[in-house]
Amino acid sequence: MLAVLAVLIFFMFRNSRKRQKDAAQLQTQVVPGAKVMTNSGVFGTILSIDDEENEVLLETTPGTVLALHRQTIARVVTPVETAETVDAADSAIDEAAPEFGERIEDATTDSGDVDGSADKKSND
Image (cartoon, one colour):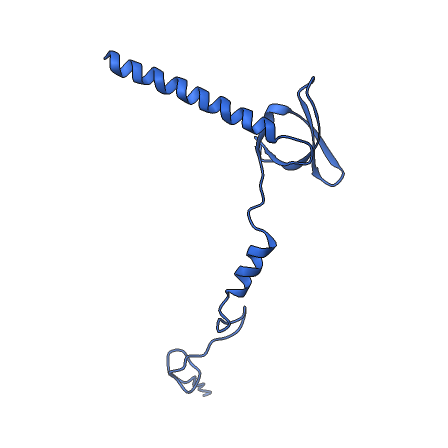
C-alpha cells in the first residue's frame, strides 16, 4: 500500500515539474511578432507585452487589437505548410485524374452509358 502511495506522489511531482517546464518554454516563445492562439481559440499576432500588468496586445485582424491577460495565450502557432511543400504536393497530382466537373465515360461501352443500356424514349 505504501509503495502505491509513493508511486502516486512521484508521478504527481513529475507532472507538476513537466507542466512548469512547458509553461516556462511557452513564456520564452511569447514575444512581440509571434503568432499565437488563445485559450478561447482566437488567433492573432502579439503587438506588445506589458510585464508589470501581465497584459498582451493581440492583433487578430488588421486594425483589430485585443487587450488580453498574458496567461490566456495557449500556444505559439508555427506554420505547418510552406510554399515548397505545397508545390511538391501540386506536382505529385496524377495528370490522368479528371478535372472537377469532367465527365468520365466507361471504356467498356460504346454508347457512353455506364450501365451499357441505350437511352430509348418512347413517345406514344
